[in-house]
Structure formats: structure tokens, C-alpha cells
Length: 488
Image (cartoon, rainbow, N blue to C red):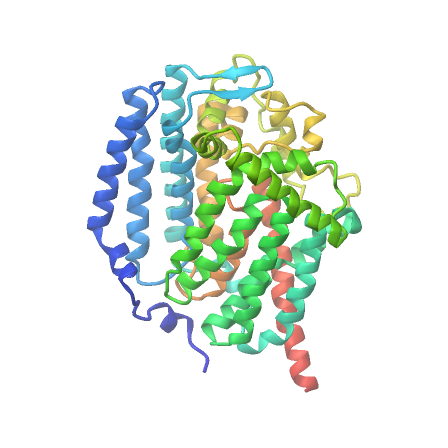
């Protein structure tokens, strides 16, 4: 039996977790406790003004989450993810960070810079959310662009999605572990069309909505397999993200909260993230991951790195603080506010010109630079995170806040954050209100970018290629399904 989207979205929720998350008392308690902790437990470097300003993202986050759990339909919590990420990256660092190492030395921002940066974060967040609401309520007027463009998955799509998932996972594995096996001219194109995140989410959708256990089992297999590839690759995000998508899928479509998966995600981030640096140092020269023996060496490397990190001379608290350091963008943004234009000139939108045409496929534009060269490598070297040679191994991502101020100062922050909110609202606002197709595509997008407030220089071209790839994939799956039905 096929369930309609709207009837499914309003099924009565069960379980104590749902009742708890709908209760406003919970959020009042969290707000009071969080504000008290922010004011009392922040490091000495932060003044009372900064501590109080840091509670604003906490309040915004709690209000948005309360509204989400009390809305009459399920959707991908875009606004809530944004507010959670801003709170983690810009308010929580006050509990652990007092300085940040760079190539040129240790950086500890002054009080004036910290106050200015915190105020800009709060203003930027507010105007971003305003842009999202304007796009959702006034531009889209309750409708969603994705629901008009994409076909709605049917129960018989599984015949095509199963082999599609196998091909997509194979391409995902090669791109992650042995990218040189696929010519660079078609690698990214194949990755976009045969999207492993799309296959995972479609399998979970068919399994949950239509009660197809074989697709649900396949969805579990793809989830675990993707996480394993991330483990071999050495990417913490790739390890935990498939399980986060699993959690969101069951929350949205299954009306259940699988707490164990969220606990798994949190534990992996806390436990594995400090291990990652040692693992990469041990395995960096061993780039051949094309055999079982190479995979075994990688897993052994994880074991050795884990033992050195958690059973070595360093304290457990130092390891936890190392994870906290990686979730700190406040000092990165403060550095940009401090140095631009005093020591580093405004970028004046130089990279946005290239970003506007960067979506052109490499088959047509063979000389196209790598995606990291579009902004991140330039940002990492100019602001002293690494050298030009160092960018060959890793790079540093610039947040939309840092990108905006580097380009146009205070006005740039307000404009870029407004534009970010409008872009996200136009593309994903009202997802799930009228159809679950927009939920699927929004989940796929989130699985690919993780940080919804990415730099616009990266977001603009990636959105175009994302739409082309997923639209071709969805329509292709639907078309092949119809052809097979006629043949049978």
C-alpha cells in the first residue's frame, strides 16, 4: 500500500522522547543552564560582554529547535542545523580556547577584536535566518522548487536503485581511496550522477515508507560500508555522517528517535578525532589502498594511533580539548577581522567571478583548477595556516563569515549571510511541507556538504552541479524503471 506524503507526515508520534522534545519546559531549563555555564565557565580571556553575546546563539538555537519539534509536519531541520553549527563553532569555543597556533606563531585575539567578531556572528546569524524565512514564506509562498522539478520515488524504483547503489558505492570508494583510477575529467561528473548519498537515502526511504525490508537492509549495508570507507580513508566526517543520515531518515519518515546512532556519532567524534592526526602521519606516505593488505595496514595504523593517543602520556582531557579545537571558528574569524585590511587587503570578490563559471564540467574546461584552489588554498596560505607545499596534503576551509569579511568587511558579512539564507531558503525552505521529494534532495545535499553555511565561493558552483547530478539521477532511475516494467 502506498502512503501519501501528507498523511504520512502527520502520523501521531509515539514514545516519551517526542513528548519531551515538544515540551517548552525542557528548553527553558537548557537555556538557563547553558547561559549560566557560558557566563561562569568561559575561559578568562573572554569578557562579560563576549560571554553574554555568546548566549544569543544558544537562545536562537533552542527557540528554533522548539519550533521544529512543534511544527505539524516533518522536514529536514535546515534552520536548526545552521543554528546548532553556529553555536558549536562560535559560542562553545569560549569553554576551551584561549589561543590558536599558526605558522607565524600563537594568535590570541584582543578584547576589542573578540567583541567585534562575536557581535558580527550574532548579526550575521540573525540576518541569515531572516533571509531564509523571507525566501520560504514570501518567495516560495509555501511551495518548494524541488517538488516541482524532481519525480517522486515509487515503490518499484527499488529494482533500479539496488544496482544504482552498487555502482555509486564503487565510484565513491574509488574517489575516496584511489581517485587516480578515474580520469579527473569525468571523476567529479560520475560522482555527482552516481551519488552514493542519494542511493543510501532512497533505499532508506523505500524501506521505511513502503515497508520494504530488503531495501532497508540494503540501506543499512550501504551506511556501514560508507562509514568503513571513511575509516580506511581517515576522514572522521565520512565515518559518522552516514549514521547521522540514518538517524535523520528514521526521525523524519519513521517517526522514531534512534538515540543509539546519535550516541555513536558523538562518541566517534570525541574518541576518534584526536586519533586522526596521528593516523594520518603514520599512513600519509602509504597512498596505495588498492589491496586487502593495504586496508589491513590502515586498520592497524588506526589501532596504533588509538593506543598512542588514549593510552599514551597525554591526558584524556587534552585529547578532548583537541577535538574542541577543531570545532572552533571563532578565532579564525577573529583573525580575519584583525588583519583585514590592516595587514591583508580586501579580496573584493575576486574569487566569486571564477566561482560563477566554475560549474562548467572539466570535459569542456580541461584547464579548470582544483576545487581547493578556488578559495581554500589561497585562504590557508595568506592567513598563515600552512604553506603552499602544505596545501598539497591538506587545506583549511574558510567559513562564510571569514570569506565575507575578507572580501568586503562588515557590509560583506551582512550581505553574504543574507544571501546564504536566501539561497538555502529558496532551495530547501518548506521541504517536506507538501511532498517528501524535497526531504530526499535536502538530505542528499546536507550529506555532501555537512556545513550548511559554507563559503559562497564554494556553495554557488556546487549547488549547480548538485542539481544537475541529482536531477539526472532521479529522472534516470524513474525512466529505467518504466522501461523495465514495459519489458516485463
